[in-house]
Each structure stands twice: as C-alpha cells, then as structure tokens.
Image (cartoon, rainbow, N blue to C red; front, top):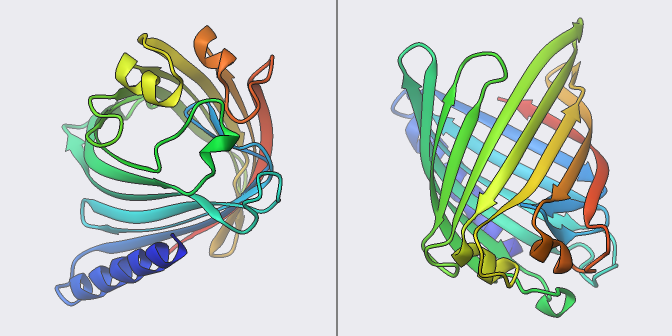
Length: 255
C-alpha cells in the first residue's frame, strides 16, 4: 500500500506539473495530523494513536488527492502501517451567489486484519458522491455517497454544519457537527445489520493558529453511534459504550 501511495503522489505531482505548463490555476494543500483515535463513519478503524497525512492539488475546479492513516502503536500489530488510504477526485463549483455543489469519486484501500473486528471491513471499495451546500450562516452541506464496488448499492448520506470565526490576530475557532445515515446494503457489509439507520453523530472543535506559512490546529472530537445494532457490533472491541471522545493536533500549509 505504501508503494501505491508514493506512486499516486508522483502522479498527482506530474499532473500538476503538466497543467502548470498550460497556465492553469493550481493550488496545493499538505496536512500532517496526530490523533488519539481514528473513527470513520462511527467505526473504530484505529482505537489508539495514529498519524494522518494528506496531499491534494486543485486545478481550477478539479481537486485530486491522496490521504492516509498510519497506526503508530502496536495495539493491533499494525505499527507504522497505513491501515487506510483514500484516493479521490472531485469537481466543485458555485450555483448562483449562495449555493455550491460537488461531484466526485473515492477509492478506499484498507490494510487491516479483519479478525480484529467484530464485523469485517472490505479490503477496498469505491464510491461516487455528490454534494450540495449553501454559503450562509452555519454553511449547511449534504453529501450522498454511493458504493459501486464491494458494498454495491450501499449508500451513505451525511449532513453537516460548520462555522469559523477569528478569536484574535492569527488565532481562530472552527466548529462543525454532522449526522450520517446509511442504507441496508452498506450496513450489511460494515455492521452486519440489514436495516436502514441513522449511523453516527460527530462534533469537532479546532483552534487554528497561524505560524508563518503553516497552520497549527489542536482539536477535540466527539463521536456517538446512533443505532443499537451498530453499538452492539462496534469497531474492534464491541464495547458497552461505543461513544468516542478524542483529541489531536494538525499541521497544514497551502502552496
């Protein structure tokens, strides 16, 4: 998987270089984050400390990128391994003065020992998605993801609100909250449930601090599973209280 990540990063860089020759508007983002857990759509991918890295390029209205989650403990015998890598391409634009939309595709590659899970996780799958949002107070956004691969016909719909404010010169506050709903096809693969259900609630608070060309962002996150079947088959440990409160810090830059 590491080789695939490197190759993909090279491809992104090459694409950016070729496009630069045609004077396209190119922007890049790089992020390096530490988190005490990695919870994806309410599912515990890593219940111990992780490092997460992301690199993407935006070429006019098209964004391509790669993102990876690396375990840094040996709790699951995955130390220094990328347990999940995402590859994505997205097109986004505005609709009038207030509305915006996006369409895209994501490839999820998992490199985990499924025996650690109460319910398994596909080793790889692909989703296409579309989103619609508004530039207004709380910036409401809804995205629908449709699986065309392992969890075929699986659908995940996520609604999100977010707000950012400046606390002082160079210091801000970012707040967001989201709720996810999944259909029976997706739940059967990831949770062993054959029902449609609201999946999880997630809230995050971060404090971005400008440091020259970089931004340091300490943050805290709370995740709660909303469905009783999912709570019984949660993550690695099937805990009696599968709600998560965890913290992290991120370092990011744009170029």
